[in-house]
Length: 491
Image (cartoon, rainbow, N blue to C red; front, side, top):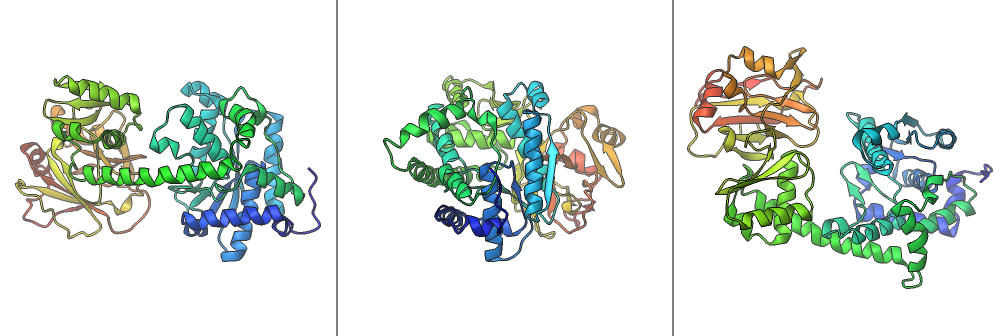
């Protein structure tokens, strides 16, 4: 489509009736899901050059004029799949951003190579590459903190139908989330047809991805063969799917809230088998997923929950492989999850406040207050406190045992954990059980050594380890002061 350059695009676009409807629905979504604050913190639009991303960019330009200035940019990812067509999309996207006087970022990803390496489909590999590049772009930046994606109401309808056909539960049936972490989707209430109509009426150009026409892909088949027939049953299937998603979201939110309250009673990740077995199946499945992801695995599915239930019914201790390199363990009394290579020691999620690390011989307190004290009883004689302020924490803090290749930067150099523990003259059997604090990037801190230095300087949060066993005493007594003394601060 040839562009009309006689006036500003946003003026032409939002003067049309379809354009007004798009902006009304987008504004409704932004308000309903609290996107405004995220957007105003600085936003990068995932910009393919297609109709949806073109519309999203222009909607946010108008939104910025309405609420006040904030950083806004376009980010294009070349997937290395469609050759000259993809090259043209990148050139179009760069030109469009320049005409709108917006910053433009682009990156090339070799998705075919990634798919071959991971043995995933091109569609899955492309999605993973996109989210990886999005995260890299805004990680550690202050000018751009939010990624705006152009999923629309028709995309959500497709997703809901696709997941229903795969037998999804409450969480999966929600469809596309309007807000998740740093990602927002302002067009999620807007049907695709309305977007295309508005752009066409305003003579605003966009590109078309030819691969979206291939009905060999399941989603494309739903889009081209199934969705057109739904209007014979329902006047506005996108609105019905939205109501369905919102209803499920309300129910799912309540179930996860119940799950978190339950898990707060078991900070060490060990749950008595009678308690675990008595949980309602809806909560038991969510507890299983949360324990597994905290241990470094991935979200579990119905097949995992059913396998656990069958094994527990046998009444004998067992170990069952789950998703993401983890195992569910029943030791005759308690249920817990471990990494397969960790010899029974679980990976434990650290949360604000008191945390039980009993398998390691410790209790831990994570707090912004340096003077906060543990309230645990029956503690032994030793403790240590670390100021984590020099580390930029990515994801959630966890405690696990050491692994091959563990290394981290502090004190001006990179230290291999294997050498650190050897230099401390810890017996090899003890080294295998020392707690290692990690985030998504790797090692953050090891008791008795330094905190990862990511080039920032601030105070807190503070992490205090308190020994509750002879094992814990052994580690801390070699390097720390008794608990009655003021805890040492390690950097």
